[in-house]
Length: 141
Image 1 (spheres, helix red, strand yellow):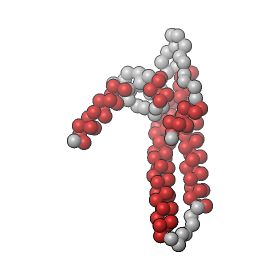
Image 2: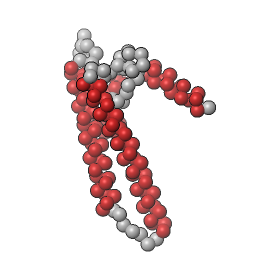
Image 3: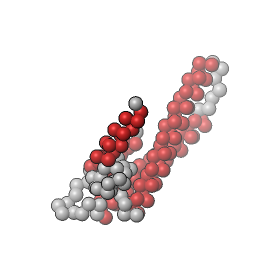
Image 4: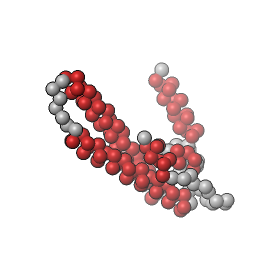
C-alpha cells in the first residue's frame, strides 16, 4: 500500500551530469517523498479510527459478529504496520537532517537513487541487504 502511494505522486529523480550524490536537490526530493507518505499514512490511520467507531454495530448473528471482528482485527494489524512505517519515516527524516541519508549503515557505500526511490527508508545497500536476508534464511532452517 505504501508503495502504491509512493509511485502515484512522484516522478523519478534524474540526476544531472556531474551532480554529487545526495546533493541538496536529491535530499529535498526524498524529504518530499517521505513527508507526503507520512501525511497520507497518518490520514489513513485517522480515517480508520473514525470508520471503526462509526461501524461499531452489535450484530445478533454470531457469524456476522465474528466477521466484523475479523475485519477489524485485519484493519488494526494494517494500521499497526503503518504506524511502524511512520516511525521509520521519522528516523529516515532524522538521517536526512544528519547528512547520513543515502549511505549503507554496514559498509558505507551509496545505496543508490533508484533503490531509495523504491524504498525511501532503506538503510542498507542492495549487497548488504541481500547478505542479511541470506543469513536470516539460514538461521530459520
